[in-house]
Length: 290
Ligand SMILES: C[S@@+](CC[C@H](N)C(=O)[O-])C[C@H]1O[C@@H](n2cnc3c(N)ncnc32)[C@H](O)[C@@H]1O
Image (cartoon, rainbow, N blue to C red; front, side, top):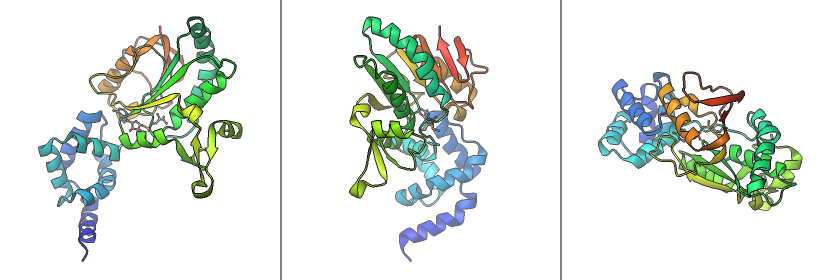
């Protein structure tokens, strides 16, 4: 029997009861310490499933051995791989579209008139950017709004804890299926359609991509390598994975990177209840630093 297959079979046999409770606790503690993502007991099967391929590559005897190895080696890179495998990266273009309407109808008119007086650039941050759909949608909204202001400088910082997602985001290549929410006119203006071997995908045009910078930032790392005078921060659909103290910490730290009058935008299923934030609520999911 092929070794790989034997291993896969062995793991498959263990898959419905993959970790001992102790090993799963070790693993979830490591994940929490690294990313503040809380893995409840209900996620055990999902985690085992997502880890199956990784175990086949690394070759430990069992899920419990993998956990022992993780703990004994204190290998930061492997914990990073683990977080990468188990985190949810679901996103899409124009997700929660009210936030992009808010940008173009309320935030940008005020910010652009203020900034054009000083010549300072407009700065936005997508702090859980996943595979890029969110920061590129922000970029499209800004580029469209700024068409009558060609001299205005602007930048979008796009960060995520996952290097794998950032690599995809940096490329800016999407299947035609993924760009379905993008209006046709916008698609034509800002995306190149693949031809020949690249048929079926499209790529964000360099003119738009050049306004984005991609970096790895864990919302719980000691310092954010990010300017502290940002005008808009999107941090959407990631705080739902954190517990209250972690959400409070993330909000407090993100707020420190907002310019006075700047906006923090969170997901529709998220809220700042129980978090001392000092921000002024503007509309669902949008808060302004006063
Ligand atoms: C569900 S996606 C949300 C993507 C996008 N913001 C949206 O709303 O469509 C959550 C993202 O948060 C990232 N993430 C999870 N924990 C993080 C952390 N501690 N720091 C930074 N990013 C994190 C994940 O890698 C994932 O790409």
